[in-house]
Image (cartoon, rainbow, N blue to C red):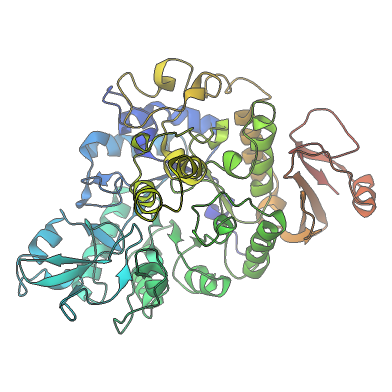
Length: 556
């Protein structure tokens, strides 16, 4: 096993719009982030990953970039960025940028030029096609609904957009496009950043032939993501990127790869493939989906979750590296989704989920607010919702095909919608949770008076202090980073039990995903008798049985 700093790191994701507002305009910003760097240093994380900071019209919260080398005005200036980078580095914290190069905003200078005429030098920067029988070139449906093709009257052609209409797909077949992207990436690396998280990077290589796919969406389209994922030249492009940019610096690189399998992941992030360090896969967060995709109240079945997590742990072992997460800017809060965020269980539940994840092999990602046990927002009306995906799905299922009532859909959005992760960070119990002196762009969760950072940083029993301990243990015990993983009791519907082994060392991890007290199997009790000590636990007092949402790690 090759040792690397990014394998031993813990990454903290910041969603800049919701982290900390310094000027009272209701939007988080870079000076606000700078003011909280000591908080992050205290937590013990090594890396910050920023969701996009670039100039953007914000049709998809910054994932529609109009200038890759400028900072979004609401977040501050490039001088603010440089100061933030310097201050983070002073504290031993590395900075990873979000890289969105599958598409740009339709306000990017390249696209503004591209749509002017068919012979414009920038025309081939994007994917333009003639109509077919007076309609779209194919039946591909965009990820946010509707067609993936947008007609442009100026030239009488359609352009491809896999996401919002305002997010035009770049043409990676064009060598000049690739050079522009690699030059831009080198510019950021020379500025001193420490890596890239690559948005939907598995979608950059389109099929050789553009043809209709099977209709699998409610509006009669074929899901474009499934058609373009892991395309014919994606690994060729990433090898080029590695040669021209990534190999020149000591970076953390992680690709968001929808539709990835463990076999495909070994190509993207294999120890000898010269592409990326690791990938984000989505199999485990799709475990509670059904025929409506994620828009369902279907409960998570623990044996299914264990099977997926364990497959990734064992099949990548020694060949590629895992990234570990429950939460991010696209996922609801895990304790509200799969756990119990009631007053009685929220704290032990948050600590249990953290223990389970941080004791696996891979690089753990902590999403802002996770370390204080933030929960989903109690949405009741669609006008409380900002997310383009949730609004579209409400219109589809409630207004158009009437599959769900308003109440049912709002309950699902409160469980699964992306805005649950995007509500402002809860810093203290003052107005707006201390996030802003103005009106926040998205409402603060009303439970901020109870759940906030100020009440936890100096409390040795808090969720925050528990995360600090988990992060510290990772630095102290090589087995947590590099040990092999073995699942026990795969069919148990309440307990997630696994071991980690490195040489003569062994850890036994027991996590109760239920609110029932569980009697341990006899052979597990026999293992525990041989223990050398307890590494970490989320209940203070001993018990012969495993209590609701209990997590305990034994050294054997």
